[in-house]
Image (cartoon, rainbow, N blue to C red; front, side, top):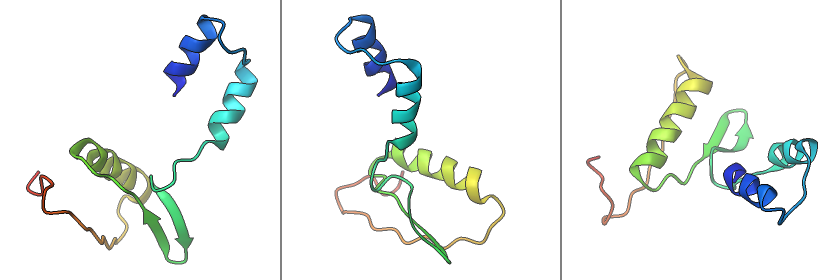
Length: 84
């Protein structure tokens, strides 16, 4: 998203200052991507659907919950690369 905005800014297609860009990025949200649905207990939803997404999820969980006891609930369709 940032790369696209920078290209649009350089092409003068959009005009947005650094403050507006930072404000927008702080407010941005992707539902289903490390989305916190509850806090006691902590309940996180993530729709990682490929290897790269799962790797990013593992990195985020390790960063935020290192050393904590975790329970994962995982659903995988039969056509996905489950072994990976």
